Length: 339
Ligand code: FBP
Image (cartoon, rainbow, N blue to C red):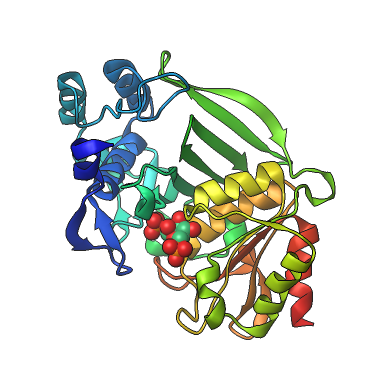
């Protein structure tokens, strides 16, 4: 990645509202994401303006991360309308919640739209510096607050109210995975840099039959702080000869889990009694996708009971929750430890 990559991955002196280091790319991707919500075709235009998308397609040179490098990329970036003007112009959104902003963005009444979006503009940011795959995660709600103006109440609601969810993964290729509420299976799209468009490559994707490959994915460095049921379940996976896989970017670990099978968990522990991951823009969207793909998404033992992720009702926009998701075979194995 060299000096340029290091610059982009460099930490700013800031931390976000949940105390996590904020990387320059976190901030940049947040700005782009908010602006893209204003003009969906904009991303396609950036793609055409800057040539290959910010990823490595097989065979394309590694250093082609365009956004802040080449003159055309800089011109395209300067063309991006600055939030909140961009938000105001969208006409599609009423409320936006970003991992990188302390407060929700409420779009002024005269421009407010039907939808509310919670998003993690750059998930797995601790992996940026070493060029390991990262992603973007989002959940979409339909505004329910009467009148034109939205409010935080439009997103602080039960997870099963989400109408659509998805993620983009920036890996060997850029993929986008989407689903709508009530769908069976998820839709996979791959970015074609030459078109600057996402092309649907797989439809109705579900977990492999029977649960798929025996893979467990978690940060085992936290195991001393886990409760006994989780420690026992992970020990059991080893006895059952499961393979361990952990990228440390939720998007990448969940993407692999949906495609190959197995389980991803970031449970609560004595260090983080509410877990690490955030309800609105990590837990909920991934739960909708995993359930649509025939999997299960739970909090494990949380606030005194084992709960379905989408039954949670968050009270703050950056609330955290434990996450246990994957094939029913493996999630049930973990949850059975609480019986
Ligand atoms: P952000 O990078 O958006 O803050 O996401 C949190 C995250 O990086 C997840 O992507 C990942 O699953 C988890 O934290 C990794 O945490 P840890 O480094 O504690 O294993």
